[in-house]
Image (tube, rainbow, N blue to C red; front, side, top):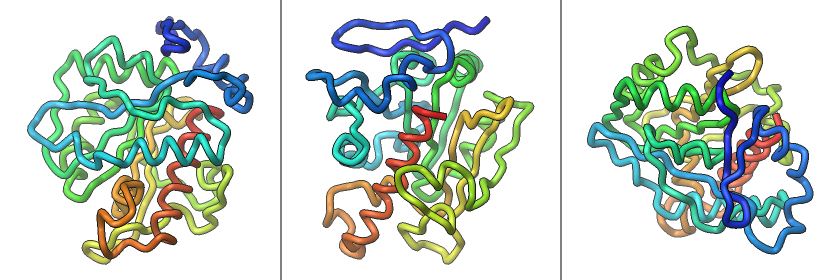
Length: 233
């Protein structure tokens, strides 16, 4: 049996056994805690790609979720390496970048174990990531393929409704935005946002002059849906 996930709550590391059952049970009451209940993390990978991109994105998304969903996530994201045991401390991890991504065998096995134990990975193509991330995720789940989620999927019908599916945030080459998933035994393990760049939309307003407040709000709402879905599916 795969070991359960653990996350740091009130300074302690707790072990959860059934796909975040305990976290799911208390998701809508965590705001009653004074101290942050858990953290989410940005995934650090090898290969030379800019895993550190979108520096202000996650703190802004966290603040939006805490205000609009009643979550109690620590205001600052953590950074965690793919092959680290620390990965199991975080219910939600975010991977972004423009370039090369490389997982070695140990890292791929660790990420697989984490996702099967109940963790959730959001891959956010910052334009240029697609050709690199797909073969690396094949190392993690050789038996699975990314499938596009339909607009009526639950991920688009959380706190905020997106009847047309994932919104377009940044325009680069005229392609439509797509949301893909790796699904194992009916559970979404990984969500891959492609040709939209949600993370850029989460960054501080004014970082990208072409972004309007309305565009940024759409990006934050979609990100909040991902957080809510990951913690309650």
